[in-house]
Each structure stands twice: as C-alpha cells, then as structure tokens.
Amino acid sequence: MRIVAVFIVLIALLGCQSTDTAQRVKSPAMKQLLAPKSQEIEAHSLSNYINRAAELASKKGYQHFALVSKLNSKHKQTIWVYLYNNDEDLQSFYQKARNDSKLNLIDTFSTEESKGRRYLDVDSIPGLA
Image 1: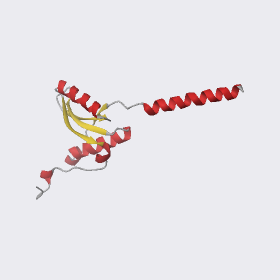
Image 2: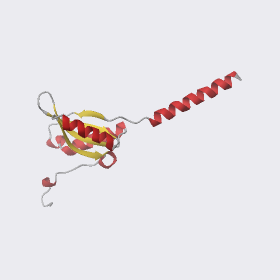
Image 3: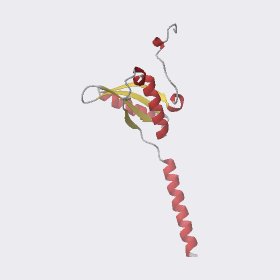
Image 4: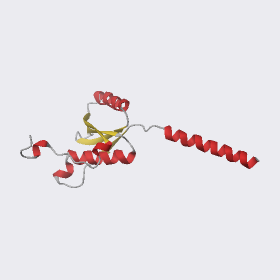
C-alpha cells in the first residue's frame, strides 16, 4: 500500500513539473551573427544574414526575429539578431533601441516565412522595376 501511495505522489509531481515547463515562455534573446569567413561579397549580403538569423531563430524555437546593426567598441558595425515571440517583446526592444544610439533596427521578420529564402536587391536585377 505504501508503494502505491509513493507511486501516486511521484506521478503527481512529475505531471506538475511537465505542465510548468510547457507553460514557460521563452524570453527574448540577442545574439551576434559573426561575419562569414568567406571574402566573397555574396557571403556578406543582407540576404545571407537574414537566412542565418532565420535558421538560428528556428533552431532556438522563436517565432520572430529582428536584424540589428550595432556599433562595437571600435566603432565598427556588427550585425546582431534579436529573437522574440510576441509584440510586447518587440516594443520593449524598440524602447531599448531609442535609448541606445549604438543600436539600429534593420528590419523584423517572421521565422517561418524567412527560413530557407534568399532576398535580392531589386537594383541588382536589370530590367526589374
């Protein structure tokens, strides 16, 4: 009888723990996208950064991401990705960016829509208006 009672308590505790982890919300995160080692211009294109950021956001389980330009200590531009799940997180980032002159929002993206896609500059395709 005692073993049955202990078993029931363990199941109840494990059930509560799994519910707690499922309800936990991912907090926003900001990570630097390091420059590619390749010296080819295409490797450093904005399209490549968007694709890499979408892969990172998908891997980490975020629904949206924003590309951010940030000045480092040597006053060089670095590309960062801000990973978030809802509009409240994005609004919080907007406020942070307004107060920090080193941060510049490039654009926001949906992870699912951006994953695996490549973007081309319209001016790079002759005849496209």
